[in-house]
Image (cartoon, rainbow, N blue to C red):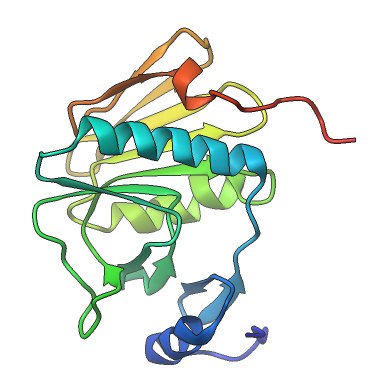
Length: 193
């Protein structure tokens, strides 16, 4: 599927193209953008966090999704694929869909050099428009560094930063803790040659 710079796509056109595509694309207010492929570090971090979350939240009313679950943000007209997403209670779907959810509680993104600004600014602003959304975690894949934002009340968020490998990340939206050593298990920070 080739995205054209100036063409506006409706959400329905995007979904029709996306379902038939072998690659993943984001939809941002009428524009389609191909998502970059993941690195081994990116995939390892997403797997480490999602696997730990899934195990810790088993038999509780939470669902954990990783990388391929599409999210619809109607107020911002965005379809995207968060790296890790947690929902609580029954899944809520985009109108007429069974493959696109709308009610994340927590989202984590593994940062790359090309998406860091977008993930922190525009994407976070879009996520904040979702009423169920309570927590955002950004994980650097090039060094030990995690940023956490959690909602305390409407329009108020607390920011925490972690850089010590012995630190514990404690989520505010679900009862869950993980050490940075576990998040970064098997991650290789050596630069590629």
